[in-house]
Image 1 (tube, rainbow, N blue to C red):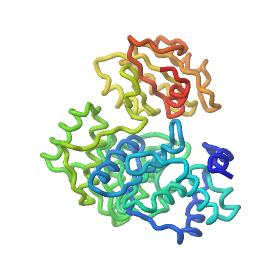
Image 2 (cartoon, one colour):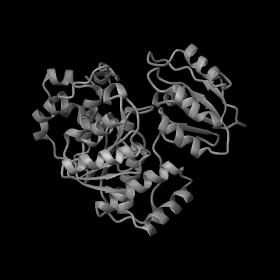
Image 3 (tube, rainbow, N blue to C red):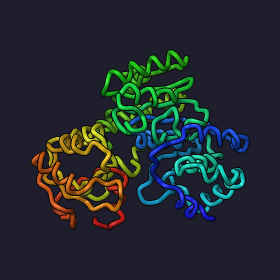
Image 4 (cartoon, rainbow, N blue to C red):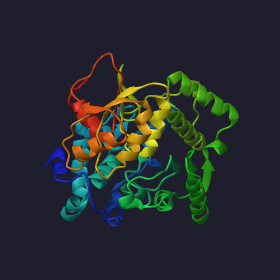
Length: 382
């Protein structure tokens, strides 16, 4: 059975996650893996861009580098990036055949989509010097946390996935930060509680914890700010670049700040066309970052949301930059009912209509989740 057919049998989303399954199955096949140095990235927002910035720093320093991210927008190949390129089908199929030989039938069937993809990625990465490994959900119990790491990075942490991670911020922080082992860097945070809890966990685990500002000297911070400005990066992307550079510094990887590769992966404030920006963010923290990025201007928001996301708060935050909303039809059972979304827009006094086509004279922001961006791009609306 091909990889595509095999993964098609597994659901992308789960109402319950067996947190013991991945460690149990990996322990049975761990002997087959030759693991590179792993940098584990955990957080609510900014994992993808921080990871890509760091992966490119390592690559330009002469290392062979893999970057694992999720979910994908158009092709599964996007999840597994090696030395500047998405993985190709032949590589994925070879890794799939190898993994299926190592797994017994029951384990192959039991693994979730994300768990199987994670193991597959680590096979593809076995000839790499470094792997930047992005957690999917949480940290402590995430499938990516079964592998030993040389460094943990914590991007901004806020409320998200409360049904899995806990209803209060402290529970979410604990779940994410319990993934640290012996060395970690915490990025700049919005909530003081995040840093306080992270420090307590680091002390308990005897983990050396750095703050970004502890690692970077004043001249480096100034140079990074200038590089981000030259590249046209929004403030939160500048902070992700700083976290990635701090990681390279702790790893003793030399980098020329003035020449840093600021290529953005699909996802956050991605310039899809001259007048179209794509952003896969879906929570209030992402919305706040977007408002800062578009401060002083107006955009047409092409939008939809999963019903379990905080779309009321998100739309309220985005309101100052919205000219009007155009609701994008998305074929997914998790998408909020259009009547509920329209009622929210009326309540917030935001003009709206259904999306039909792009006006070349207008500026657009496509936002709401990976699924919304995927629907837009696949529909060739642009």
